[in-house]
Length: 97
Image (cartoon, rainbow, N blue to C red; front, side, top):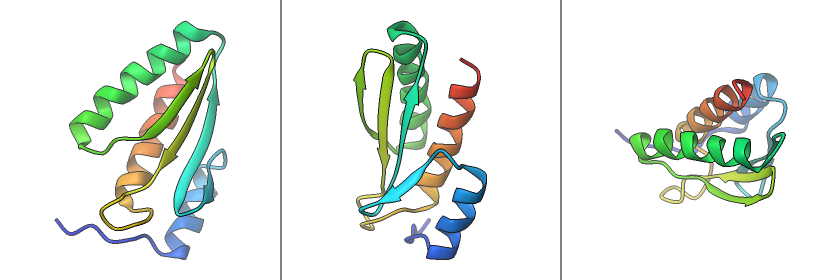
């Protein structure tokens, strides 16, 4: 399967449904905030399993109850459907916490 960079129209459409995400420097970006470290780390653990199955891994960091995420597809140098899919999965996982 060939992966191609998303068009500006595709990125705009993504943002219509995922308003907590921003785009900068060729990456989707978001900060998730949870009630405590345990919830934040639980989120990271669940996302890690999804990311591994998809073979598409986020750039992220954790400080106590906050997770900062950057998604990009390095092979093509920008945002792709893989990033949209993982961002959507992250939103679903966060909504259950």
